[in-house]
Image (cartoon, rainbow, N blue to C red; front, side, top):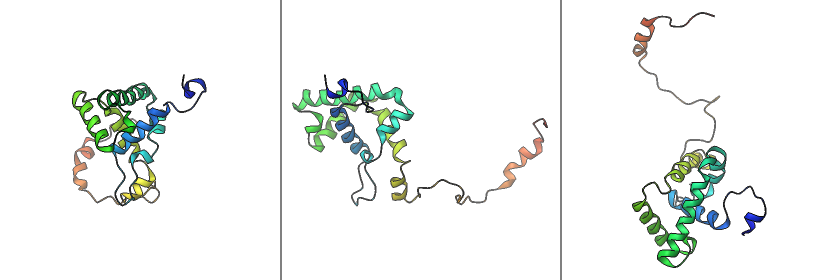
Length: 158
């Protein structure tokens, strides 16, 4: 038994799985070369998954374990021990065979990543709610509402 199996923990992944997750997150969204934009491993993707999509944790654990099994089977080393190019090639090979491999994690990563304040600031969006400051909305052609206006009232007064 591992330490995580003996003592209760809030972390749903064991040490190897956490290490593999960080590596995979760096493959999905690497940090920018200038250091302005963080890697996906630098945002709390696991926290997002636990809170918003906990039903996918079993699949995530299985996929992270599969990476180690594939690495040991083909390279004789754990996934974390491989050099970056070999890691990428291994992930690409598994995805070639199994197109759905890590797809859920990729979607969760992007969703979480682009909600992160540091990321929003780095891409120039600004980490703030849309109100009260609001965003500039260009004027539209209000004549497009004419069919709705002609329809008249479609609700009942209270």
